[in-house]
Length: 276
Image (cartoon, rainbow, N blue to C red; front, side, top):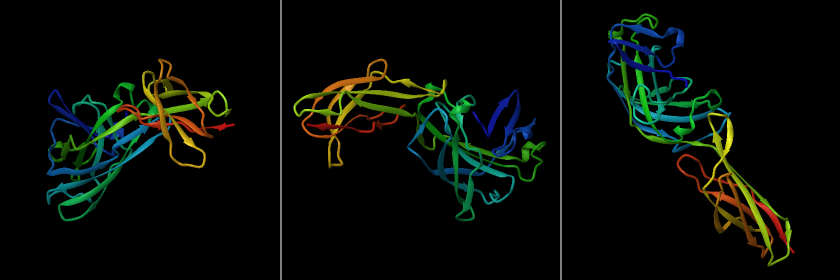
């Protein structure tokens, strides 16, 4: 994963990599940064994020940064951002960061609105399947205060991070198909409707069968815009759904999945069946 800022105490030495500082500028010093006079609130981020197997996903966020009068957020060596972490907030927790620090606009002498994005790269191995579901939001800020970022006096560098600011679901992108045994059926006769539910496998960059899930068989009469649920069936271990339904009028048939915390809702494209 692309970690932009990590603070860890190791044998009394502190290593700090700033938000937008290249890896080559990672700094190590025997001192420790002081606690920056800053706090974070009013975090806004998507409630759920759908991530497939290849395409980068950008998740916008915003938050309010409150800081002391001694903190110069306009300084070129001041950085802040928000990020996602999975599980407990520890040094080893999986984290997702943005490619760039947030951009802050002062709203008073001690407050600012900051905006940025978290960038997720599934093709680069940012995610594991077991991490699907709820992630938490944290934010951080670092002020180098004019220090040489390659060799700073760490006691003059301010740092603050804050966890538990919100949550977002990071979900394995889902796909659902629908096929029918015939596209033309006599009224009162039945048609077999089949489908397949799959979801992204972040580790192997493919789509896996999603078995044991309820999917609704739905019908939309020709000339209308609303689907009605006919029945609910469950996918087998291969992600397949199959059932029969009586055709009383021409229209569109599809399967629809309501979603779970790890996998988003999805509806298949309706397939037209004409009633003779």
